Each structure stands twice: as C-alpha cells, then as structure tokens.
Image (cartoon, rainbow, N blue to C red; front, side):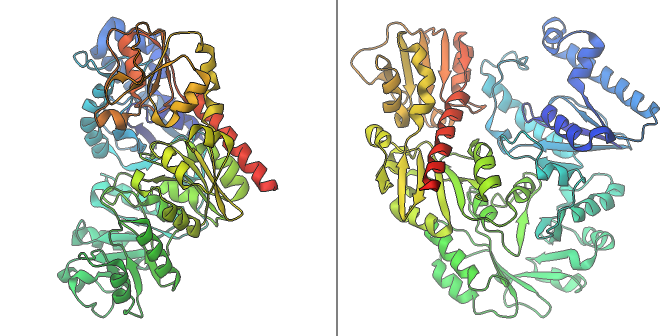
Length: 593
C-alpha cells in the first residue's frame, strides 16, 4: 500500500516522514517528493521557481511523482511506502493508495516563511498569501483524505500517538470514543473495514454514531463491520430511536423528553439559561443511567462545580464542558471521563481533544501544570517542559487559554483545588499574575511582572525569568535600538538595553518625548493577535539591519516586518528556551526545600 501524506505548508510533513522512518525502520520506504525532484532535476526547489516559475515546478512534481509510482509498482519489496508531497500538489488517487491528511491546530493561524518560494506574485504580504491559499487547500485535503492525523505542537521526537496511529503499538487502555462521520471516512468503501479495525487496535472503547450526521444505511454498514457492543448511538431525533435496532448502547438527549426504555446513557447539552447548580440538581435525579453532562460552561467556578458533581459518582457520570470557542480541551485532557470523546481532525466539537493529545495525557497524574495566557494554543511550553515535568515527575503540562479578567486570586485557588502546582505565564497576564501571587521573588518585585507561578507550602510564589532569556539583547546595548510593543516585558528589556527607545505598538508613538532618528536594531514584542486588534506597523522610513523577535511563533508579524525592510531576522527561540530553563531550575530548588 502507498500512503501519500498531504497537508498545509509548514505543517511538518517532511519531519513526520522522518518520524515514520524511525518507527518502521527497514519495514517502510519513505520519499519526500521535493527531495526526489531535486535529485532527478539536479536543481534546488528555489532555483526551479526562479528559472521556470511555479508552473514549471508543478510540471516537475507531476513528472517525478508518476516516475516514483512506476518504480514502486515495479518493485517487489512488499514494504509500506510513504510519500510526503508539497502543499499545492494535485494528484489522482490510485486503487492501492491511501491519503493521510497531516495537520496541526495552528494551520489556520497562518505562517510566514523566510526560505521558501513565494506562490502569489500579486500578494505583498507573505502572511496573507498563506491565508489566501488555506481555504482552497483545506477543502482539497479533506476531499482526498482517507485518514486525518493532527500532531501536537512543537513535539519533534517520536510520540506514543505516532506509534499507535501507525499501528506499530497497541494502546493498552481502551477508554475513549471516536465519532464516525461519513464525511471523514475513507472515500473507498473497501477501506472501511481496515479503517475501523485499525481504530479498535488504537484502544477505542466506542464508536459513536450520531443521527444528525449518519444515515440509516451508514449505521447498518457500520453494524456489519464493528461489534455492536462497540457502538454508541447518540440520538437527537425521536424517530431514530424507534427505527434503529435496539442492540446498541444508546445515548438519549433529554431535550427530546423523558428517556424511553433501552437507553443506557442520558445526555444533556442545553441548560436554557439556568444556573449550573440547578442543572446539576435536576440531572442528578435520573438514576440507573450513565449521565453525560455536556452543557456550555462559562467560568472556572462552573468548571470546578461540574468536576465536583462528577466525582460524587465517577463511574456513572461524565462531565464534558463545552464552549463557543473551544476553550476546554485542556480540562478534558486533565480529567478523562468514563465517556471520553476525542477527534481525529478538525471536527465540529472544538472542546474535544485531538487523538494525539489523548494518547499523550493518558495515565495517572501526580499533579498538574500549564501555560496560561491568551492565546496559548500555539505555545511551545508543553513540549518544552514535558521531559522535566511530565515524564520524570508525572505532572502533565497543558495549554490553558485565560483572559485578563480571569486572572484572579479566586481562580488561582480553583486551579489549586484541581491539582495545579506550576504555571508558565505569558501575554497578556504577566502584570495580573504579579498582583495575584502570595510571595514574589526580587526580580518579579523589581519588574512588577510574573511569568512563573509555583504552588509551594500553601502559597502561590511568583517569579520572573524573562531577564534570563533577554540576556541575548546585551550585544546590542551600544547600538540604536527601538523596542516595538512588549508591555509585559518592558521593564526586563530596560535592564539589558537601558538606552533603547520604547514605542507603543497600539499608538505608534514613542513612550518618551524623544523619537527615533536612526534604527540599527528593532526588538519586536507584538504578537499576531494584538496586530489583529489594531496595533500598528513601525515607520516605513526605518531600515533596521536586524529584527530581533521576542516571539517564536510561525505567524509572528516581526518576521513579516523583517522581510518588508530587508533586515536579517532572529526569532525568539533563544529567549524562550533560556527563560524556560530558568523556570525548571527554580522548580527543582523548591522541590529540595
């Protein structure tokens, strides 16, 4: 079988090909189409774009791909074959071919590339170029895909989820539920049995079939391929309950009325503006069912109340909080329920965690850790601290979106009750975290900002390790430096660049009376979300030779600004890694006390 890996630019197809090679070793052949083109043509991809344009490159793709398929078909190795193709490559599937759509949660955010050919000549912004192509390509990938796999952000090494997805390792704990959507199933019906068998091997406790997305023909076909005890039928239409054979596990939505005979799960999805405590009290009146509470949750207090309710009868209750913006996957990862729903790809229930996350977070936790800020879905903190906290200390690290108004002492206490002992704090919460900490170290007091909270001996202790990360700026202390934005790290930057001029990115004006006349180095400290909220670009008259970014994200506007003015670019990875290492050092010292 030939597996073709598709996905957006920068999603990590070539890297995952290396992961596959490590997982299968000599049992699989792996080909990167771009590398094959370079080998056949004797040219680099960039030079092909320069001399032949995008049309010429597309011709090379088709030619080399056809040649590769022919060579594979003529080979009698019997090995699995994986081919990673470019984001814009269009091909026709063959009978012995499966397509895997590889994705990341940040695909829709946009990415900027310094070392890849531009694809839309008329589009000046490389960021807009990516977004302009995103929707069209997303539709194509979903149409082609037989399987979808979303890997976790910034996890480079082989993960347990890679081994389980590829069928090399069996998941020993069959505890989660996958919803079967006809649109996400393989387009070739003959592949359905393999598709379902593979997911049973993953450790799928139930396959959920929902009557809002599945026809009766679809249900009948699934029943012929999967043991009925492995099917959970979720009914939100009264007539569905009567028509489908009553041999399945039944989930009845209470919005339809009182449950009929035969239902094993009662689900509640709507609270109708009622207080949560009222909902919990009324729902608890139903006995002899498994109660699935999946109402919209608005606050951390409600989140805690729902968890307390579930823990009163943990075997017969599942609390699955929902939101309009998908902000609760971290909770579902931290507290897996008896009915633990997961998604393979994008899906329509944004609060369901991805399959890769479920594999990563399964197992008992001694305590919990997280990164808090807004946004945090693209944060590298979970990957950075996992070897130290999760693997060595059984303290999983979660990405928790938190708004400024939610950064309060009361909510910190709720997090403590849930088991959290460690928080990396990022924008825009550093100043609020400073006010919430019970005890502050000297650096945090001096900077009036906290980027690390650790619960130790009954107190939340606040620290600031930004200064450790910003030491790399000292090489520019005798140059003309402008710092664009960065309210949360401004005092820390001043310590290393006392002569720098600071500008408000929101107003585009200097914070002192002295405007910049010459700019040698621009320190970028504004994230994409703030630019989308109205922050301004620096003056077009400035021509810094270097842009040093405090942001390491792939959509960073600092990268885009460097391209605009022709400056060299340094990402914020060094800053991030250094301050994160200091955080681990602090935690280790507290452990010994």
